[in-house]
Length: 82
Image 1 (cartoon, helix red, strand yellow):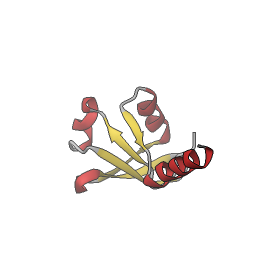
Image 2 (spheres, one colour; image 1 turned 45 degrees about the vertical axis):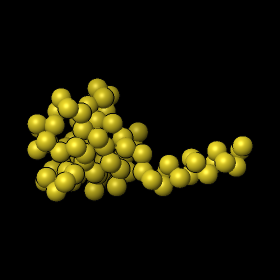
Image 3 (tube, helix red, strand yellow; image 1 turned 60 degrees about the vertical axis):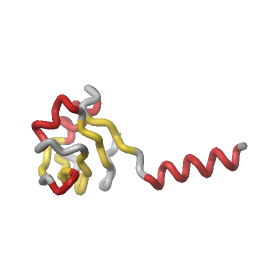
Image 4 (cartoon, helix red, strand yellow; image 1 turned 90 degrees about the vertical axis):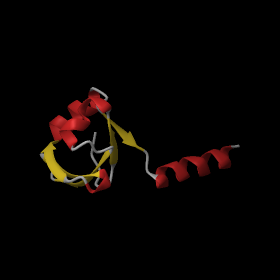
């Protein structure tokens, strides 16, 4: 699963302590091996191996927050169908 820059993830309650109690993180760079991210509410920044991000997603410790653009595209497609 490719990781896009600008993708936001909600952080679960179980691991917030590892991320300065931030609610979300946003990917700012992906070089294929590691990702760099910023934490929500200006609580910091960091990096992690892509493999670890996939692990957190698999365990549902991080959940992707749909972008407004994707939401609007979905909504427009439903209106065209109906």
